[in-house]
Figure 1 (cartoon, rainbow, N blue to C red):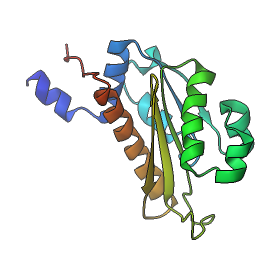
Figure 2: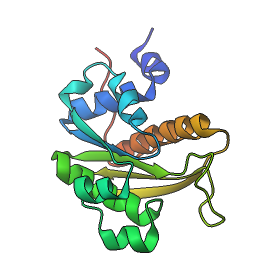
Figure 3: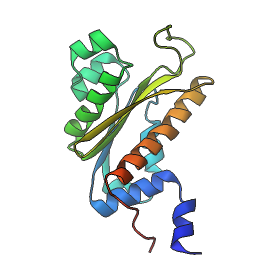
Length: 174
C-alpha cells in the first residue's frame, strides 16, 4: 500500500498529530459543550503526548474567565455561546497552556437551554494556529450526544484545515 493511500485512510486526529509533531507545534483544547471529547479524540492518535500536555473543560462562565481569561464584559454582552467568547477562549487557551495551537468549543447541546436567538444545536468552534484565529458558527441537529459528537468532528476538521492553510503538510508515513 502506498503512503498516499495510508494517509487518505488515516483518521483525521492522526493526521493532525503527525502535522503537529513534524512541525514541533504544541496544542491545547478548551471545551464547554463537548466536555473533553475533542481532547479525547486527539488522544486517540499515537504520539500526541509529544505535543498535547493539557486541556481545559470550561463549562461555566466563571471557568472561562478564570482559566482562559475570557473577559467578563464579553460574557455579559455576548454570552458564553458567541463568536466573541469562542475567539477569546482560543487565544486564552494558548496563553494558559503556553501552546502554539488551540481548538475550542462553546455551544448549546440541549435538550434545554436554547432560545430563539441561540437555539439548541448552536455551537461556536474556535481555532488558533500561531497568530491566526478563526471562529465558525455551526448548527447541529439531533439529541444532546449527536450535537456533541458532530461538534467534535467539525472541530477536528476546522483544526486540520487551518493547519493545512498555514502551509503545514502531512509528513510521509515511514
